[in-house]
Length: 420
Image (cartoon, rainbow, N blue to C red; front, side, top):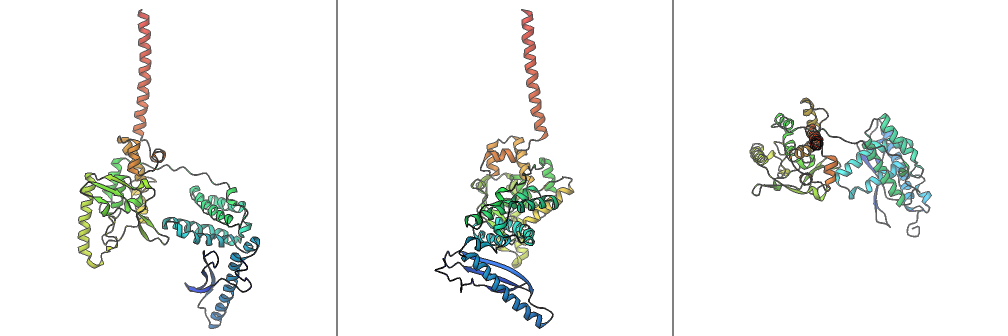
């Protein structure tokens, strides 16, 4: 490698960027040998405009000096002779940020947003003040982070497990690159996953809920999830082009997701192959859809040029054609159910309620699997089947009657023997 690049003279190209009133250091280039993308950024915390020209000049010169050090640090990281020298000045948080940027291209926007929130808002802010080098990170450091999240921040164990997944994947990449000797995250005790038990609403309560949100933005996604057990993104992402009024079919073939910058995106590829499914268009839903279509046509004439035609194929839109935001659905749904006296009920409970109510009404497991779009019937059975109290009592009654019948048969047999 050193024959191709003379480290004495070579430095990764970098630049200074003015952003939000501060100087930022930027390296955005291509590795001359491996052709991989190299992207790093760091805020200097130096203001572009100060109270005096002298201070402005000092900050500008200081930013230039720091850029030189920044370029030297990352040049050493990528082109050093020894593996030890290559990481001796690389902090774990710097590598974590670099890793996050490198995996962006291979992830769905919604997944990348989740990773970014975990890494940039939680993991990096915790580790950055500690100045732990990548090759000096130990399992105890990670364990202390999990303990801090669970005890001081009162974070849900399932969320901490997601943090663990991010750290583990990052260190696994470092291990493959021979930048660390082992994946220290593998030595950490993860918190036990908290088993989620969703609340189930009866059909009468679901209909009461729908009645209370008529003509609101929440009505559309709630209606579709109630009648078909759709996931939030599937309900909010239903398309007119996927409604076959002639053959009475409704295709679940699009989901609404949030990108890394919280922008709404129609994603035609669903969670799994089984998630893409064709269901029957029942009369109640058909009638509802036709009414929605009529309202939207009136709104287009009313708003004229100010109507948002970008999402013309989406069913769940506001009066002006804008998409209904996913966060709004989640927050507003919980607010409404709380007012109705339903404790700890959120939007995904509609899916659980659909599964339980339909099973109670006579649907078998295989049918439910198809309606819900599960790739495995075990998912349907393990996660979405909540027996109603009425069903359990009926089962107990069957058991009781069976045992009584057996006792009666014994008595009758004994009576016949006594007669003989």
